[in-house]
Length: 251
Image (cartoon, rainbow, N blue to C red; front, side):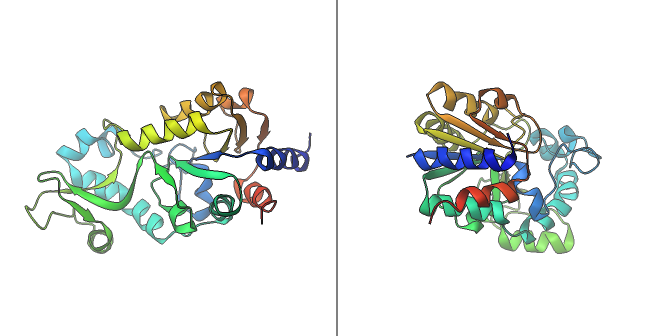
C-alpha cells in the first residue's frame, strides 16, 4: 500500500473517532532542531554517560556536570519553534477528534503550538525546583542567566541548587500526569503515535494498553516500533509531512 493510501486510511479512521489521543516522542521535535537521545552520530548520549550527567544521583553530587551537558540542549530547546507536525496536532484538537497529547518531550513545543491538553510525562523546562527547600520557580530568568554564564542556578531563598523540572534517571515520573496519560490510553478509541520509537517504559506501554481497551492504532514514525504489529495503519515517513495531511481533513 502506498503512503498516500495509508494516509487516506488513517484520515478515515480519525474521521470516525470520537476520542483520539496522540502519543509523541523525540521524532516530532527533531525537525524543529532538537536532537534526540539515541540516534547514532547525533544523539545526546553519543558522547555522554547518562548516569553521570543525567541521573538524579549524578545531579546531586555534581550538578555542574549536568548543566555543562544540558547547556547546548537548553539553548536549542528554548529557541525552538513548533513545526508543522506540532501545529497539525493543535489543529486536530481544535477542529478534529483529538482530546489530548501525551508527550515524552520536555521542549514544551506542543503548548507553544497551541495544544491545550498536554501530558508531559517526562517533565518540562518551564519550572525549576530547589533541591534544598523545594521552592518552585519560573525557570525563564534563571535559564536566561545560565545560557549566558553556564553557571549552576541557585535558589533565591536558601541558595540551594535549582533543578529543571525534567525527569532524570533514577526519578519517578510525575504520578498524576502519568495516571492521566494511562486513563487517556484506556478511554480513547484511536491512539495516534507520532515520532516515538516506543523504547522507553512505561510510556511505551500505552499503545498496547489502548489496543487492549479496544482502540484503533495509527503509527507514524520513520523506524519500526514494537506497536506496528498491533496497528491499523503504519506509516514509516516524516511526521512533518504526514500529520498536516491528516489534519487537513478537519476544518
